[in-house]
Length: 303
Image (tube, rainbow, N blue to C red; front, side, top):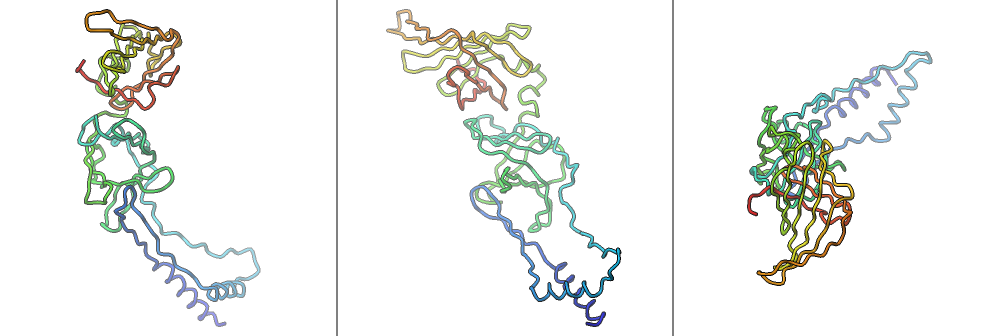
């Protein structure tokens, strides 16, 4: 085969490969945006021809063929900064709604309004060819697209509109209420944020700050109109959370009538528990019976 013919064949295959486009489409499914790439296939005959040509034209020396230089540009630089996104975000800024937490390295965790974890993943800035602009995709750890929001060029974010369950036309407004440190980002010391009254459904939590890292917590959980269960915890702040190690008390309290003193039945006096800040709420980890599973207490003044 003549050299000019070989060169022409190689040029034609190279042109075919470089002309391959990328087709990206948005799906209106409940949680993800689908993508697909258009693949280019080289026939077996063309592959054999290229292999044969290379074998006949490359001399048997130590000289290496020139390697192809990739022109693909990574749309997300390695030094992408997500510090401006870091914090706790709630729908329309309401702490009683669904939320998500973004860390400074671009990781996110989504929560239902109840406080239960919904999903975890990471954020990546990529070019959306449909609109010819960059957007932030929220990927699940599995690699599936969870949602996305526009890149408006602002590094410091306090509110964003995220693509909802039915596509780009259904946008959900999220407002950042707290920074990376959660409630502690409002200027108070890390231990001071625990103090106050908190509520979760039928359970009321009161935490008192006695100073120098010593706290006291009481939980009253109504079981009927005339009875409730009460947990009493002496606590120590360990630098991140409040901890009770084996000195908690659980008591069943019942009233015979409105005028009588209640009867109290102590169920144990060696309970253990931890209280930690999560977003705009407090999580109660009952280490004795796991009574607080899934509960997130929100601050209140109602009791």
